[in-house]
Length: 113
Image (cartoon, rainbow, N blue to C red; front, side):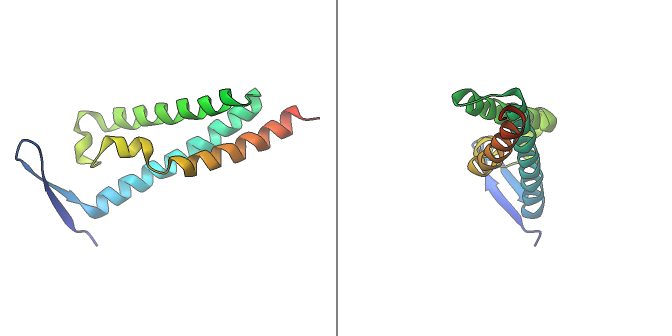
């Protein structure tokens, strides 16, 4: 289960990744993304955001979470993740579905009579 994957960097240095550790890190980020989608969907619904402004709020919250994860991992992000862009785009649509679910539910609870 804990296989080590070796790749060669652009400088010719061989980098080894633990598959189990990478999977754990990605699943932790996925948990954070799902939680963030639910919380930001609730906030968008309570604030009464609708249409394009609501979707822009989701994109902003995804970007802020990505920056926070990169800041937490620091300059040694390669120790924890293989690729930075995958952190931004991985499971983007799944988070969007969660966001829309909470957004419309709270919007209907607060703003529809």
